[in-house]
Image 1 (cartoon, rainbow, N blue to C red):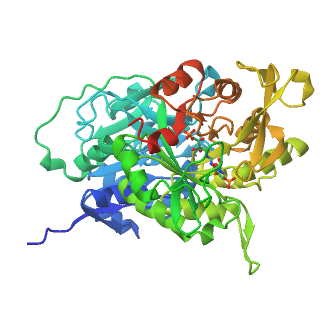
Image 2: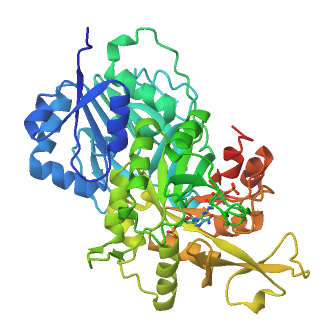
Image 3: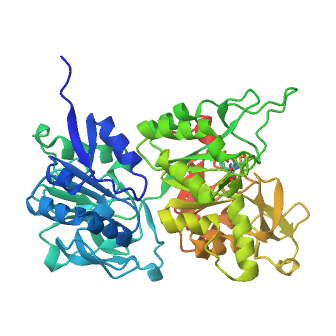
Length: 519
Ligand code: 1PR
């Protein structure tokens, strides 16, 4: 006997990527009915509203299409509802985001920006714990597990909205992590990106009656957890297959007569394995993207599509994001390239070479043109969706006055006893050094809209001797966005050391996972 088809209605107003939510719903055995008109909201049996994009733009669409009114009626009638991220914030009276802007006004209170003046990095990106206040059904499996957040704005608990608040989270201050009243739920975190525990939240919403036994919820607030990211460098090998590879100081070819590209396996399989092994995030870097046109690289888009069907933690993809004119003279903006990556399942994109050119230009003119890939993509998808990947090489010098770039005293002197170094940025996979330091680049890209920095180090890449702590300290102290430490992890202690000795928010590694030295 075939199983009856289960449906959930999804409100996707087209402002961004809700592919991960769709994948998670399907993974849990439900089919999706998309809202086309306000009536579809009123007729829904179970409605999920994954808010994406900016508050004002979302309200604009909801008001113009008549969906705002339908949503209010649906929620006021206590119909089963789950809002996610912006889908929680829109229920409040107003938001400061590009505002003040009025929200749906169902819950008393406003939405404001996190305060970064007290040293907390904004956006709030990563895994954090919840303090659960009341029986909220959908949070029953959470316990002390962390869930994944990515946002710059948050709603605050107050006496006026306390009957709604089911859990809070701490990040500089205490903000609302979830609300529940009757059948109406909303969460600020991303259940579709919170691994198994996140899937349990969605499962409890989708199958409310099937969970009769309740586990005690005793989540208690703690601090933002440090993330560990598994990175897969991918490229097409000489036979034309897209493979996971890994270099030593960016050299990915075997030192044999054939000199072939090192082949460590298939991208989709390895990403799925790292997800199962517990990676907090997965990154794909298309390392030859700088010379290929990414939209012509259909295998990479397919890899993203397949991976996002089974990997429920954040996925980042980088390589080749820049404006491009193809052989027929057709122009593609970097925003179009990024949009295709997002549509295929990426949660964040990462920009390498093009960010270096944008930063150089910005430092030269002092003008933000709004036209760089960084600015365009962060304007449309939000800063949290844009990572800048820096590929610096250490250059030893005798005195900090020898260069016009920020230089530091290094822990281990250079080959000729040099006590200082600066970190020169490179483009095209380390092939070309540029006249800009990692410090100058990091500060410039933060101003241009980067939400996170992936800080590689060519000297340490693949060496397994630990991270370049001097470099990571320099950059993580210089910016207020999260910094991901990368290159050189060779033992578990290297992860704890980088978190103990620097302000990195996450650590990324490749070789150590590929060699299965750490799970
Ligand atoms: O310039 O926008 O097309 O982006 C290209 C991207 O590809 C950049 O993010 C750049 O870092 C990356 N890339 C280019 N060439 C290479 C190479 O290896 N030949 N890989 C490359 C960079 C560095 C790390 C690596 C860590 C950890 N890989 O991401 O995974 O160093 O390695 P480890 O743990 O084994 O030490 P664009």
